[in-house]
Image (cartoon, rainbow, N blue to C red; front, side):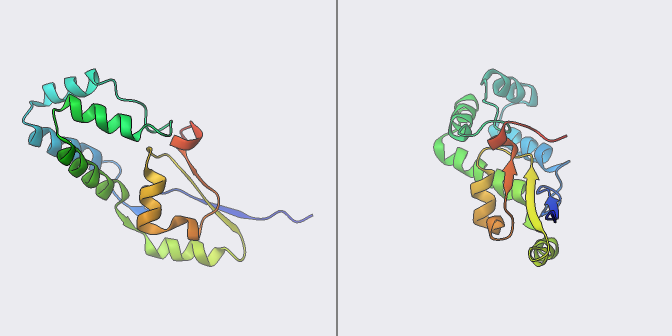
Length: 149
């Protein structure tokens, strides 16, 4: 019996060109400055907001952003702007060379994605990059409840 070969891909910093080590810190710093709160007040408000876990649970996105908006005293337009900026930086740009390589592997091997993520990533990354056209299965941490080491 012949076993099918598989190639497993990650998203952040692999299929998506993004600096996972710094974008989040820069994003928080920019939004803390825009909020008008000191860094300490900003952190305290976020901690007090009791935000849901969004990297190991699905269907938490709306609750997360709603609580964040209340904690930072932001109206819905500002929260939408914050979300748009977050997704822009979170997703980065497509590593087209690697994406095309994965597509070319499909006749010879299965290609799958296993990635730590936050609720909403599947929708946003599919809209931007069409991962499901090449990869099957796609497993996200927020949908499985597990983070990969």
